[in-house]
Amino acid sequence: MARTATRTQTLLAQLALALVVILALVGLVLHGFSADVRERIFTSIAERPGGPMTFRFILQPVMAAVMAAIDGVRDARSGTAPYFWSLVTGTTQRVDRIYDGVIATSRVILLGLGMDIVYQLIEFKTFYPGEAAIVAVLLAFIPYLLLRGPFARLARLWGVRPLPATPKDERT
Image 1: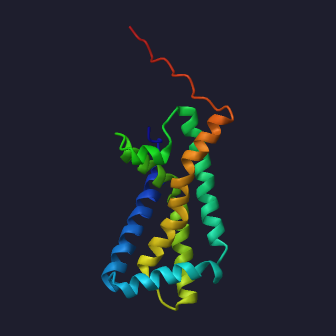
Image 2 (image 1 turned 90 degrees about the horizontal axis):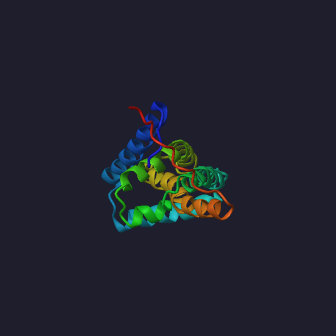
Image 3 (image 1 turned 180 degrees about the vertical axis):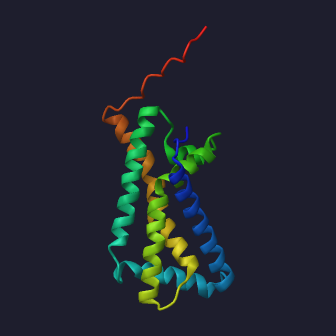
Protein backbone atom coordinates (compact mmCIF):
# COMPACT_ATOMS: atom_id res chain seq x y z
CA MET A 1 0.00 0.00 0.00
CA ALA A 2 1.49 3.33 -1.04
CA ARG A 3 1.70 6.09 1.49
CA THR A 4 -0.62 9.01 1.24
CA ALA A 5 1.72 11.75 0.11
CA THR A 6 1.19 15.44 0.56
CA ARG A 7 1.29 17.69 -2.47
CA THR A 8 4.75 18.94 -1.43
CA GLN A 9 6.10 15.40 -1.09
CA THR A 10 4.69 14.50 -4.50
CA LEU A 11 6.23 17.58 -6.12
CA LEU A 12 9.62 16.91 -4.49
CA ALA A 13 9.53 13.30 -5.66
CA GLN A 14 8.62 14.36 -9.20
CA LEU A 15 11.36 16.99 -9.18
CA ALA A 16 13.99 14.53 -7.91
CA LEU A 17 12.99 11.88 -10.43
CA ALA A 18 12.88 14.38 -13.30
CA LEU A 19 16.28 15.84 -12.40
CA VAL A 20 17.92 12.40 -12.18
CA VAL A 21 16.49 11.36 -15.55
CA ILE A 22 17.31 14.69 -17.23
CA LEU A 23 20.86 14.79 -15.86
CA ALA A 24 21.47 11.19 -16.92
CA LEU A 25 20.16 11.90 -20.43
CA VAL A 26 22.12 15.15 -20.76
CA GLY A 27 25.26 13.37 -19.60
CA LEU A 28 24.65 10.61 -22.14
CA VAL A 29 24.12 13.11 -24.96
CA LEU A 30 27.11 15.31 -24.04
CA HIS A 31 29.63 12.62 -23.20
CA GLY A 32 28.24 9.36 -24.56
CA PHE A 33 28.90 6.05 -22.85
CA SER A 34 32.17 4.96 -24.41
CA ALA A 35 34.79 2.90 -22.58
CA ASP A 36 36.74 6.09 -21.76
CA VAL A 37 33.67 7.76 -20.27
CA ARG A 38 32.80 4.67 -18.19
CA GLU A 39 36.38 4.51 -16.92
CA ARG A 40 36.32 8.23 -15.98
CA ILE A 41 32.99 7.82 -14.21
CA PHE A 42 34.05 4.78 -12.16
CA THR A 43 37.48 6.23 -11.40
CA SER A 44 36.09 9.56 -10.25
CA ILE A 45 33.36 7.86 -8.17
CA ALA A 46 35.97 5.65 -6.50
CA GLU A 47 38.15 8.70 -5.72
CA ARG A 48 35.33 10.87 -4.33
CA PRO A 49 35.31 9.55 -0.75
CA GLY A 50 38.87 10.81 -0.31
CA GLY A 51 38.30 14.25 -1.79
CA PRO A 52 36.56 17.37 -0.57
CA MET A 53 33.06 17.06 0.88
CA THR A 54 33.67 13.51 2.10
CA PHE A 55 30.98 14.00 4.76
CA ARG A 56 28.28 13.45 2.14
CA PHE A 57 29.35 9.81 1.81
CA ILE A 58 28.24 9.41 5.40
CA LEU A 59 25.41 11.96 5.51
CA GLN A 60 23.38 10.77 2.52
CA PRO A 61 23.39 7.03 3.31
CA VAL A 62 22.61 7.77 6.97
CA MET A 63 19.66 9.94 5.94
CA ALA A 64 18.48 7.20 3.56
CA ALA A 65 18.87 4.64 6.37
CA VAL A 66 16.75 6.78 8.70
CA MET A 67 14.02 6.96 6.06
CA ALA A 68 14.33 3.18 5.51
CA ALA A 69 14.00 2.56 9.26
CA ILE A 70 10.86 4.70 9.49
CA ASP A 71 9.29 3.04 6.48
CA GLY A 72 10.45 -0.41 7.61
CA VAL A 73 8.65 -0.01 10.92
CA ARG A 74 5.60 1.23 9.02
CA ASP A 75 5.82 -1.90 6.82
CA ALA A 76 6.01 -4.10 9.93
CA ARG A 77 2.94 -2.40 11.42
CA SER A 78 0.96 -2.72 8.21
CA GLY A 79 2.07 -6.31 7.56
CA THR A 80 3.49 -5.37 4.16
CA ALA A 81 5.94 -7.69 2.40
CA PRO A 82 9.66 -6.77 2.61
CA TYR A 83 10.39 -3.84 0.32
CA PHE A 84 13.17 -5.13 -1.95
CA TRP A 85 11.67 -8.61 -2.11
CA SER A 86 8.30 -7.24 -3.21
CA LEU A 87 10.02 -5.33 -6.02
CA VAL A 88 11.98 -8.38 -7.18
CA THR A 89 9.16 -10.91 -7.04
CA GLY A 90 6.88 -8.79 -9.17
CA THR A 91 3.96 -8.10 -6.91
CA THR A 92 1.08 -6.17 -8.36
CA GLN A 93 1.98 -3.19 -6.18
CA ARG A 94 5.51 -2.75 -7.59
CA VAL A 95 4.84 0.75 -8.96
CA ASP A 96 3.28 1.86 -5.67
CA ARG A 97 6.27 0.51 -3.75
CA ILE A 98 8.79 2.28 -6.01
CA TYR A 99 6.75 5.48 -5.72
CA ASP A 100 6.84 5.08 -1.95
CA GLY A 101 10.64 4.80 -2.02
CA VAL A 102 11.07 7.80 -4.29
CA ILE A 103 8.87 9.92 -2.04
CA ALA A 104 10.86 8.84 1.02
CA THR A 105 14.24 9.58 -0.56
CA SER A 106 13.42 12.60 -2.74
CA ARG A 107 14.89 15.16 -0.34
CA VAL A 108 18.04 13.08 0.09
CA ILE A 109 18.38 12.72 -3.70
CA LEU A 110 17.93 16.46 -4.22
CA LEU A 111 20.48 17.19 -1.48
CA GLY A 112 22.86 14.71 -3.10
CA LEU A 113 22.50 16.32 -6.50
CA GLY A 114 23.25 19.73 -5.04
CA MET A 115 26.28 18.50 -3.11
CA ASP A 116 27.65 16.64 -6.14
CA ILE A 117 27.30 19.70 -8.34
CA VAL A 118 29.28 21.74 -5.80
CA TYR A 119 31.85 18.93 -5.48
CA GLN A 120 32.34 18.69 -9.24
CA LEU A 121 32.73 22.43 -9.64
CA ILE A 122 35.34 22.51 -6.84
CA GLU A 123 37.22 19.35 -7.83
CA PHE A 124 36.86 19.14 -11.63
CA LYS A 125 36.13 22.79 -12.47
CA THR A 126 33.39 21.43 -14.75
CA PHE A 127 30.08 19.58 -14.43
CA TYR A 128 29.31 16.03 -15.53
CA PRO A 129 25.52 15.71 -15.25
CA GLY A 130 25.41 11.92 -15.63
CA GLU A 131 27.86 11.43 -12.77
CA ALA A 132 25.78 13.65 -10.51
CA ALA A 133 22.73 11.49 -11.21
CA ILE A 134 24.65 8.26 -10.61
CA VAL A 135 26.19 9.45 -7.33
CA ALA A 136 22.87 10.78 -6.01
CA VAL A 137 21.13 7.47 -6.70
CA LEU A 138 24.05 5.43 -5.30
CA LEU A 139 24.19 7.39 -2.06
CA ALA A 140 20.48 7.96 -1.47
CA PHE A 141 18.18 5.45 -3.11
CA ILE A 142 20.33 2.29 -3.09
CA PRO A 143 20.89 2.30 0.71
CA TYR A 144 17.16 2.87 1.20
CA LEU A 145 16.36 0.03 -1.19
CA LEU A 146 18.71 -2.36 0.61
CA LEU A 147 17.84 -1.38 4.20
CA ARG A 148 14.06 -0.96 4.29
CA GLY A 149 13.31 -4.69 4.27
CA PRO A 150 15.87 -5.58 6.97
CA PHE A 151 14.54 -2.76 9.16
CA ALA A 152 11.02 -4.17 8.75
CA ARG A 153 12.29 -7.62 9.74
CA LEU A 154 14.08 -6.17 12.78
CA ALA A 155 10.93 -4.33 13.79
CA ARG A 156 8.97 -7.60 13.60
CA LEU A 157 11.66 -9.35 15.67
CA TRP A 158 11.46 -6.60 18.30
CA GLY A 159 7.74 -7.14 18.63
CA VAL A 160 6.16 -4.64 16.28
CA ARG A 161 3.05 -6.42 15.09
CA PRO A 162 0.62 -5.55 12.32
CA LEU A 163 -2.17 -3.30 13.46
CA PRO A 164 -5.57 -4.98 13.55
CA ALA A 165 -7.75 -4.22 10.57
CA THR A 166 -10.25 -1.50 11.30
CA PRO A 167 -13.84 -2.50 10.62
CA LYS A 168 -15.52 -0.72 7.74
CA ASP A 169 -18.18 1.80 8.53
CA GLU A 170 -21.39 -0.18 8.59
CA ARG A 171 -24.27 2.05 7.68
CA THR A 172 -27.76 0.86 6.87
